[in-house]
Image (cartoon, rainbow, N blue to C red; front, side, top):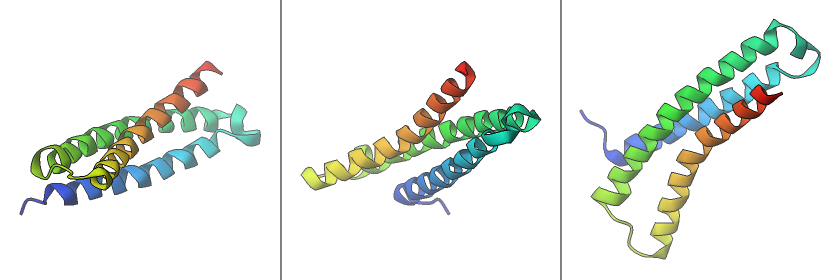
Length: 108
């Protein structure tokens, strides 16, 4: 049984949000008095891995979004378009924010 495009989109966005929460937790490992130990290095590597997974999930969400909104049922009206745009911004912003944080961590 193949899931519908809207079910796939909802699942990918949920996974992406949960993984972003995990990303936030990894950042907490690298702060405080433990920041100068191997834990900080491990937290940085884990954050990079989670960012990569977020990127894959975000890309999948964008493809599912395109299937739902651009191909299957084009939004009709301002409210539908605003919802569609908000969903794709949410799908794209989490990986971008994660990589921005990783970049800032690497520069320190």
